[in-house]
View 1 (cartoon, rainbow, N blue to C red):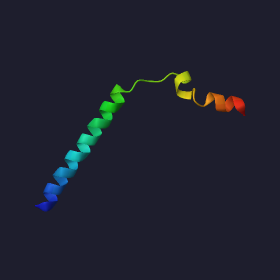
View 2 (spheres, rainbow, N blue to C red; view 1 turned 90 degrees about the horizontal axis):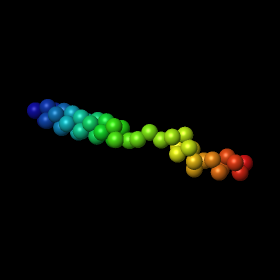
View 3 (cartoon, rainbow, N blue to C red; view 1 turned 60 degrees about the horizontal axis):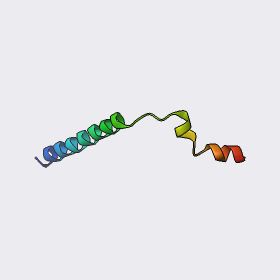
Amino acid sequence: MRRLVFAIALLAVASAGISASFAAVHQARTLTFAERFAPALPLMVNH
């Protein structure tokens, strides 16, 4: 009985985490090349 309760709780936590990660991916916007690499560009120019 304890195993069943533990398995159900684990499944609930896992499904909540998966749905949260899908929501975060859905809301994230794609960055342009300049936005993604702008912090590294001055470092590459100085070397």
